[in-house]
Image 1: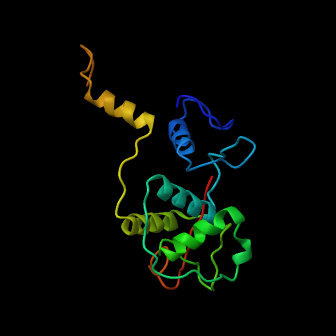
Image 2: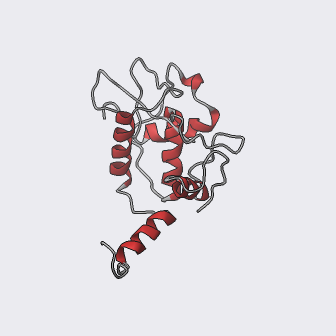
Length: 170
């Protein structure tokens, strides 16, 4: 994955191989017009889609712990993200933000992402390593001999008062 299939992901960037790996494995599709938008924020609904696509790729399943009910802002959920939000909500991976809202188009905060990832890993029984080519190259380099002369739930954040949800897929 030396080159990118997205016009805004330059070859040689630290993330190029990872973006291409995710695209090749059906986890990301970009934002349209052959763009990935690597420097853009991820919406809560897009993060939900990414998580569900990864679950599909890794053949991870999680039990249904509750049934999805309509949120006050349910009409704001994009059609492509509805299944991901419902599935991850049912699995206890994502929550609303309070006031019976999910805020699907809002940005996913780092705290929300951490909480959702933790719940995802717990619910799906762990995550195996799925290495991108850059990781495999780095691992191979670590095992090679050096050349002579070189140096060798209640909410996303866990509080009742601050209910937070899911988001995003790029």
